[in-house]
Image (cartoon, rainbow, N blue to C red; front, side):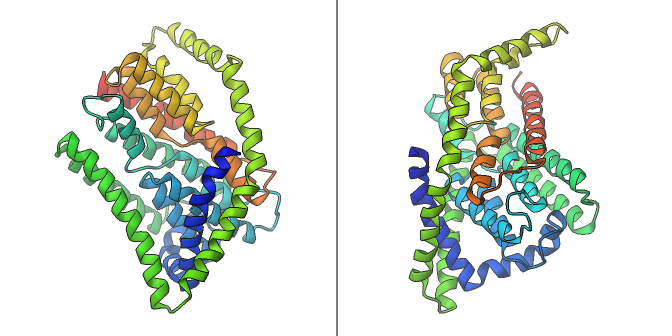
Amino acid sequence: FEISLGLTGVLALWLGIMKIGENSGLITSLARFLSPVLCRLFPDIPKGHPVLGSIFMNMSANMLGLDNAATPMGLKAMKELQELNPKKDTASNPMIMFLVINTSGLIIIPISIMVYRAQMGAAQPTDVFIPILLSTFISTLVGVIAVSITQKINLINKPILILMGIVCLFFSCLIFLFLNISREEMGTYSTLIANIILFGVIILFILTGVRKKINVYDSFVEGAKEGFTTAVRIIPYLVAFLVGIAVFRTSGAMDYLVGAIGSFVGLFGIDTSFVGALPTALMKSLSGSGANGLMIDTMKELGPDSFVGRMSCVVRGASDTTFYILAVYFGSVGITKTRNAVTCGLIADFSGIIAAILISYLFFL
């Protein structure tokens, strides 16, 4: 209930801003511009539908590490997807693709993780930046492929290939840029860029509303009311979900699972240094705050610049909180039959964990 109350203000703010963009036609224009690519990933969504704009805004906020902005935009997109859904209690194909992209946690600027490392006294708080970038990219790519296979979506087409080329070029340039600046500058630029973009989006939406001569204030209030009702609607789903997490942790089931994995891997003579980061890896699928707590505990116990301390940070940033996102997003629109959303989300999650472990060995050992 406290989590839901904490979300209320954020939801009211961002759904109010989104309503301004919707009434001004900005989101519709954005949807038309993105249709060639997004319609290949979401073939069941009509071309130019406003939900494509909401999906893009959510994905952009996630990539910039703006969690507070991403959740309201995601809930807005889910509401619009539900309007297109013929079976109101069953997840549609676009919903599953959208949620798997969310749970895979594609992020370009992992601000919060770098801040935690700085607070814990890491010599180079941003040294996990590139490993996280690579891990989360692999997680998202595998997740999209998994959903595409189950939904028989053909990804071998011109718009998707062009997008993949642009994404790969962008990631290459970003990695090259951050390899050639100091660690202090990397953290400063990451935070500055994210904040400028966040503030710029708000100003853009408001100015577009003014230019289109709509009542910006009334539009904002209308959207903010939706934010309050959404926060109340997700409370039962959060309660059930968080109780389940508490049982998993306090019963000792997580400790038994981590110990069993370490013993099994050790039988083959494989290095088991990564086992110390597994609690964070397992918890991040269930709870973001829980994973952050375990990540901080690992850095506190072993040191932020230790191999396991760094790996726990990379694992934490490799993908997002799968079950939390599924519970909140599906709960907000009353979906009870999730189909293969959990399976595809966990495939993306697992690939992110494996990628994070291997990349950490490559970078830090």
